[in-house]
Structure formats: structure tokens, C-alpha cells
Amino acid sequence: MFAYKTDSENAISLAQKTIEALAEHSTGAAKLPEEVKQKVSNVVIETQAIIGMIASGLEVEENIALLENYHAKNTALLSDINNYLEHKG
Image 1 (cartoon, one colour):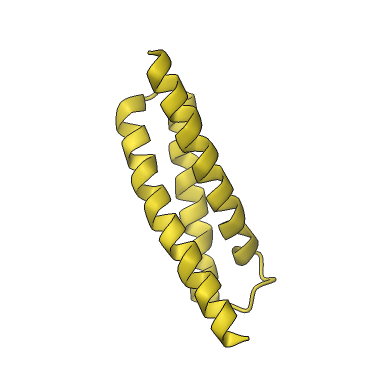
Image 2 (cartoon, helix red, strand yellow; image 1 turned 30 degrees about the vertical axis):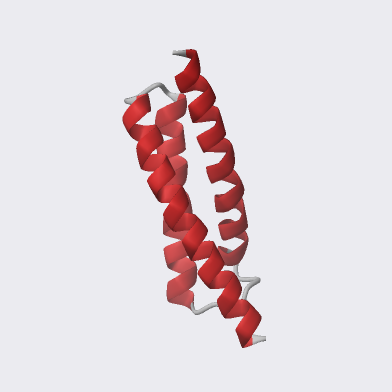
């Protein structure tokens, strides 16, 4: 059980850092199209829900795997947004 706790803490920590960066883009400060901001906002909410389920002890193993999948997608989304903003100038 201790390994799951460590795995979940690491997964949550990484995911939270990524969604914090994404959340900054959904607030309106970034020059992103509204539909992209809405998608980012939805992704943040969905990821927070998964984190909440892990913290509550609900199907921890399955939700860690789900969180890792979301984290990979969120990281790619963040990279795409940063590239878009960099090239948009």
C-alpha cells in the first residue's frame, strides 16, 4: 500500500503543476481563442476530479493510471499552447 501512496503523491504532484500552468492560460491573460480557453478549463476541472478520487481512496490504482494518461495529454496541450503563444508573438 505504501508504494501506491508514493505513486499517487508523485502523480498528483506532477499533474497539479501542469494543471496550474494550464489554469493560467484559461483565465484570459493569454491570447488564446475562447474555445481553447474553455477546453483548458474543462481539462483542469476533469483532472482535479481525478485527483480528488485518488485522495478519497476511490479505485486508487485505476485512477492513478487515468491521471497519468491525463497528465500526458495535459503536458502535450500545455506544450501546444506555449508553442502557439511563442509563434503568435
